[in-house]
Length: 271
Image 1 (cartoon, helix red, strand yellow):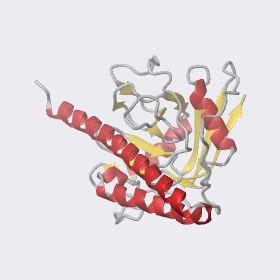
Image 2 (tube, one colour; image 1 turned 30 degrees about the horizontal axis):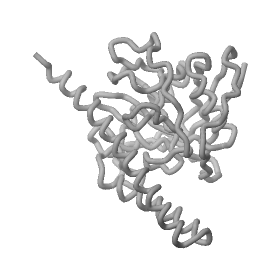
Image 3 (tube, one colour; image 1 turned 60 degrees about the vertical axis):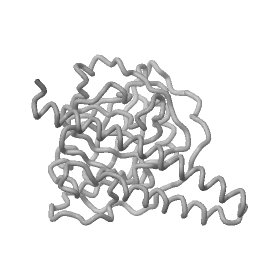
């Protein structure tokens, strides 16, 4: 017999996958609209087209489940434990294809997310997930993650903080996708992503990872479909625990974090 807790976890996983699929649909619709508009109106109004696309994504997200709620949603009374974000603006550059893999697969790489809530250090798995680590090294070097908000926190069934979307809508990406990797990592036992894992978000389909990723702050049951590519440091876990303790803004266990989590600077270094 399926217990109530098992059923709750199953529903959470199914909800997680549905939301990823909705994001893909919204992204595809936005691209199609942009393509048509650009072909008719020409290069002069590219800026206007970009604004329109952003508006479409936000409208679609509001119509979707609570995980898509943007920071403009009504906040709860929970105290924000984080500091004011550093001055700067989010970059919106995209690329047509995945960058060539240039990292040294035999070397050690670390990523540091200097956030408004504290620094999150991550040991990256270059050998096991070279495309993913290479992509993050490339994007971090371009300042792609700088000044971006972590837009999603889940506190029921699965326990993750999701980041890496410059639009903050859950639908943004770098313009290219990377292949799934390391799905048989020895850390993934019984469909559990253990606390301290950093893994790629995707659309629910194979090989659809872009720039969005999630940090697991408590063991979470998920199918092994999300590339695990690093492990969060002990100090980084303290930061994640602080963010999770502030909760999310819907009260339903899935929404924007009450903590204002902004990545001031992301760096990837080789040691």
